Image 1 (tube, one colour):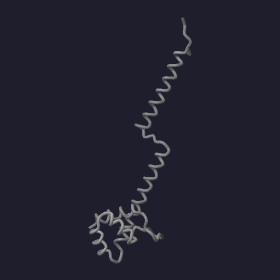
Image 2 (cartoon, rainbow, N blue to C red; image 1 turned 135 degrees about the vertical axis):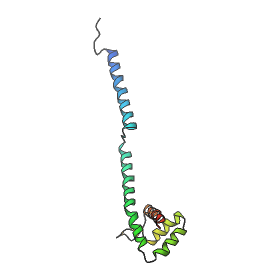
Image 3 (tube, rainbow, N blue to C red; image 1 turned 60 degrees about the vertical axis):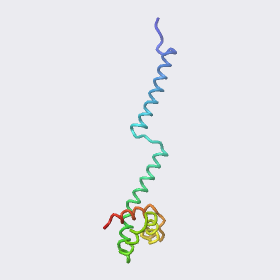
Image 4 (cartoon, rainbow, N blue to C red; image 1 turned 180 degrees about the vertical axis):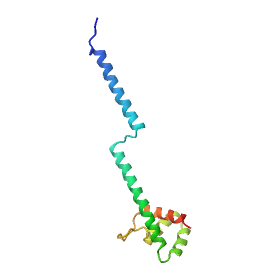
Length: 121
């Protein structure tokens, strides 16, 4: 007796193989190959861009702090303050404000600036 290539059992095996193959491919792609969903990719890009901006702006803040009129006095006051007060001190001093921007509302830049200043001699 000869069976048809597409009898009911063969069709079930082909479909089951396709489903299992698709599931294995998706699992391997998301787990091992770095695939991401659109929302995840956008979040990662946003975080990366924010980190790059902070990394670029913090040295400007440090430079402005070091070239301020009372830099030595400010450095002593900054060292006395705890980390959250250091951020406020830098923001109030305007050193984290970027050229052309009169306000400093970026606590992340101020935090990175304070960290960089604390490592300087």
